[in-house]
Every structure is written in structure tokens, then in C-alpha cells.
Length: 453
Ligand code: PHE
Image (cartoon, rainbow, N blue to C red; front, side, top):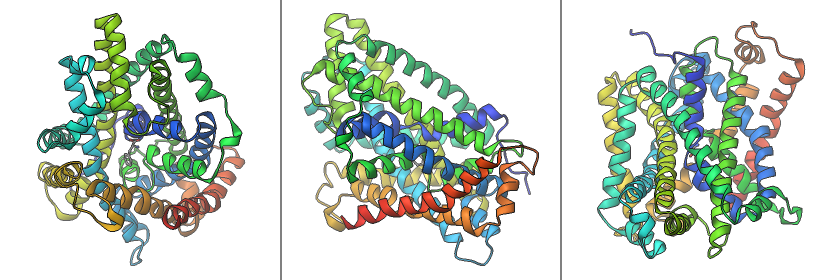
């Protein structure tokens, strides 16, 4: 059998995993959640969730992946043969496929906005809310965009682990960080930046409530890509000298910084235009920001145009590196379980996701009346079963698997690269405490709250 691929360098490993984590979750969803959940206080709770729950779970996924060097299904099958744990792998693949389908819809919007920014439409349109509604509700263009972004991700995946994922992550992630730096700089020059800083940095503790807590935890899962098969699959391509805890720490730091930078880009803009409240919801990025770019355009046309193009390019690149981390687990599973070649397996995933993504996309327009459980559209339903049902279940099962099922010695051996790395004892003690107790109980709390209330 052909030797299984690995990433070629440690920096490639960190950038690929960071590429998965950094996505629409950071620049689109995070500012929305911060806006809706009281600003600074949400950020503090979010960071606690990331450190106490997200980081141990990410390490746990790396452990299962790197220990087995297999796709999620075979990974669980080989660590727990003849048990039901294989279901955990199947769920991971299934949810990656579902998320990829609906994530492509929003990624497709970013592609559309990038094109409109380049052609000057974003900086000159008269009613950005009407433009957004009209575009998302129309039948054809959004589908073309869904197919467009999936073909981009297809292109990367077809080139394999080193020649595709690693190569593009090493190129796209630095570019993305550079764009962020420029945009944050530009944003601080806006009149509303003082107010924005106060909103993001000065906590008002009276705003803490159960909802804020649960939103922060949900956001941590989504943003770090934990609880399904994406980081497990990337972990399966890690080399034996990759440091799992260190990698998880770096990825978490990058992801969190990018999310906060996302806020620093968006809120000064929001407070400068003043017409829309910071809790305007998902439209913040697609409706509010165009008016900011228009304002800048009215003053200095070139500046408005450049910022608009850079912003939507940033969103698209961030979405793309997350999409490839969703595309790969399903592809690897098909290659390794059915013997399909990489190009054929990739095509199967691309085509099925274009079909499913189209259904999700049409649910904003022509298929708006097709409803599922609790009156949800395709898009809402996919979002609901993946992010709110399968990911939390995946997170709990993962913490039980690594914290309780796998022999502790095996986990320690994996964390220390076969006892060649030295860590202080408190680090292991806290890792096991978090993965055994804190993570599963906290996730259980979110899960029950979301289902019952
Ligand atoms: N973490 C990605 C984001 O923030 C989304 C994602 C979830 C990617 C799950 C892969 C797996 O946008």
C-alpha cells in the first residue's frame, strides 16, 4: 500500500490547523456574537471557554489522529476495535460533509461581494440591505458562487496533503494575517474607534447571563473547529515529532487573536457610521460594512475601494482554508475505505456538496417554503443538526474517549512524543482534569440548554 501522506514541516502543520480554525467564524460570526452578547464581557468568557474547553479538546483530536495516522472512521476502529466508538468517526465525517455544504453558501456570498467590490458595486450601491436580500434570494447567482468556492477548495484538495493543503495554507495564512493588519490599522483611523475600543475592552459584568455563557461556549467550538473530524484528520498527517500541546496552543492563540482583530476591524466601522447598532446581527458584515466603505469612498475613492476589496478577500480566504479542512476528512475517508483515487474521491465530495449547498442556498429564495423540524429551512436545519447537535455530542464523546477510554499511559506517550518531551507535572494534571471533567460537563450544559430551552 502507498505510504500515507504527512505534512512536511512544523510551520505547515500549525498554519494548516490555524487555517481550519480561522474562518467565517472569526470575522463574521465572532463580531456578531460579541455585538449581540454585550461586548467585552462576552470576550472574557469566550477566552475562558477557549482555554479551558477548546484547547484540551483540540489536543485530544490531535492525539487520536496522530496516534493512528488514519481517517476518523478507521482511527476509532483501530483504537477501539469491535466497539460502537466507530460511530464517533462516522458522525465526524457526516458532519464535515454537512457543514461544508452550508458553509459554502456563506463563503459563496463572500465571493460575490469580492467580485462586487472589485467592480466598484459595493462602494457605490445605494441600498446595501436591499442588495443583500435581493442577492441571497435570487435563484442562480448564489448557486454559481457555491459551485465557485467549492471548486476552489476542490483544486487544493486534489493536490493532496503537502502539495495542496500545506502549500496553500503556507501561502494563504500569512497573506490573510497581512490583510488583517492593514485593515485593523485603517479601522483605528476611523472616528468611532474610541467608542469601539471601550465596547470591546471595558466589561460590563451586569450583562453576564446564561445566554451569554452558552453563546460564548458555542462560538468557541465552532471557531476552533473542534468536535468533529477536521482537526483529527489534520492530526493524522502530523509527523511523529510534532508537539501536540504546543501546536494546539499556537492554533488557539492565532484563532483568538484573529477573532479579536475581526472585532477591531468591524466595530470602529460600526460605531463610525452610527446608523446600525453593534447588535445588528449577521448582516453586520454584508450590510453594515458596505456603507462604511461607501463613506470612505466618498472621501477618498481609492481608499474605500481598496478596503472593500481587501475585506472581502480576507473573508473569502479565511472561508477557503476552513473549507479545505472540511473537504479533506470526507475525501480521505472515501480514498481509504473505498479505494477511490484522490481525484475521484475529491470530485464525489465536491459534486455532492454543490448539490446540497444549492439546496441550502435556495432555501433563502425559491425553496424558502420547504420546512423541516420546527419550521426550519434547509440552511437552518443543516446548521442546527451539525453545530448544535452533532458537534456537542462529538465533543462530549471525544473527551470521554481520550479522558476515560484510552489508557492514560497511551495518552501521555502521545503528548510527550514517546517520552522524549519534558513537561511540568501540573500540565498533565490540568490536561486530564479539563478533558475528563470540565469539558464534558460544560458541553453537556450547552447541549441541554440548547435543546430544552
Ligand atoms: N472554524 C471554522 C470557522 O471559524 C469553521 C469550521 C468548523 C471549520 C468546523 C472546520 C470544522 O469558520
